Amino acid sequence: MPNDCSNCQLAERVKRLEGDFELEAQKNSQRHEEFFRRIRVLEQHQAVNGTRLDTIVEKLDAIAGDVASLKERPSRLWDLIVTGVITGTVGFLVAQLL
Figure (cartoon, rainbow, N blue to C red):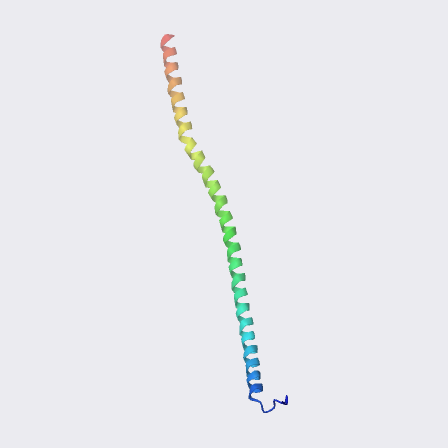
C-alpha cells in the first residue's frame, strides 16, 4: 500500500481538524485570559474589603470603649450625688450640734 495521500480524503479531514484544534486552542487561551482577569479583579476587591473590615473592626473597638466610658458616667454621677447628700447631711448635723 502506498503512503501517498495527495488524493486522500483523510488528509483534508486531518488538516481541517488541525485547524479546528488551533482555533479551539486560541479560544481557550482567550477564555483563560478572561478567567485570570476576573480572578485578579476579585482578588483586588477582596483586598479592599479586607482593608475595610480592618477599619470597621478598629472603629468598633473605639466605639466599644466609648460606650463603656458612657456606661460608667451615670454611676460616677450617682456616687457624686450620694457623697454630696451625705456630706451636706453630716455638715447640717454638725452645724446643729454646735
